[in-house]
Amino acid sequence: MKRLLAAIGLLSTGFSAQSHEYLSLDELGSAFGWDFENAEIKSQAVAPGLYVLFGVGGNVMASIGDQGVLMVDSQFPEMIPRISRKINELGGDKIDFTINTHWHFDHANGNPLLGREGTWMVSHIKSRRMMAGAHEVNLVGMVYEQPPLPIEAMPVITYTDDMQFHFNGELVELLHFGPAHTTGDTAVIFRNSNVVHMGDVFNASYPFIDAGNGGDLNGMIRFCREVLARLDEDSVVVPGHGPVLGYSDMEQYVLMLETVRNRINTMIGRGMSLEDVIAAKPTAEFDEKYGNPARLIDRGYMSLSR
Ligand SMILES: [Zn+2]
Image 1 (spheres, rainbow, N blue to C red):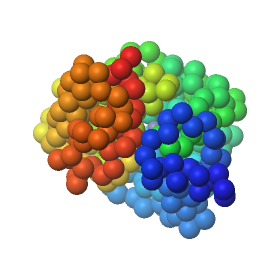
Image 2: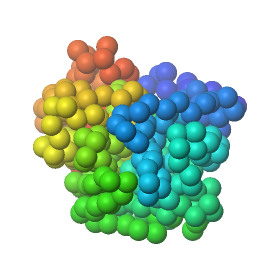
Image 3: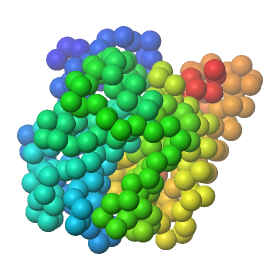
Image 4: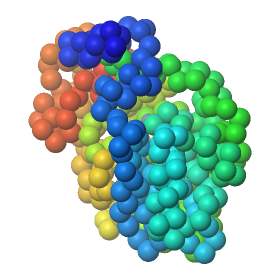
């Protein structure tokens, strides 16, 4: 508890990227307000047989049809029985495939339970590599050391540039465009339904960039631009966290990131320290829409300073 309070204290005073006080997952959960005991899975249909499932952690998607169930991301082990029940309610049976958009705990920690039930996990090769080891995730003001996933939780199928599923009458495109939120992000386009799951490359609030593990602000912008070029104005865009959004929301988000990136770059060019950049409020006019910019500025500054 003392460590948690310390972390919240660090959070309120701003930026302590140097802190190496690790938080446990429970402490992290308390800090983020996760309620594993009472959280229910809510579903939203985005196309026939295609659903977004909201619980605790990253947004999950499920394609449910004649050939079975293909899921995107797995949240936490506590949520898996509830996700499975919801999928059954929606007409699905067992989960055949789960695509992990990336290796972070709030998108992949449900994998061990799925693996034991016979689900095949799929990810970008660099995400699988990260899942195999222990890694510090510096969330700015709090640091979590993510342990390696057990073998049954690991993707059995990986790809490098792109990959396709042909499942439930749908072309499912897995796309990767280099380092962005992490080094192994995947966008999943359900082509026939015109829906994309962006993982944490796109969020309803300011994004977190895992710069300590190779994440990159310029890369996030490039990744979003590449995906937008493969969508149209009617596309449904599912962010890693937050409500279901659309093409213009992601377009505005990229413009925001480009504006903030250009400002921070200029400030770095003038020799400004992180503290100076924070004080100069490079995100000011976007804060009402996207929330607290602390993580974006800290991790953006780090990735642009390299
Ligand atoms: Zn993430």
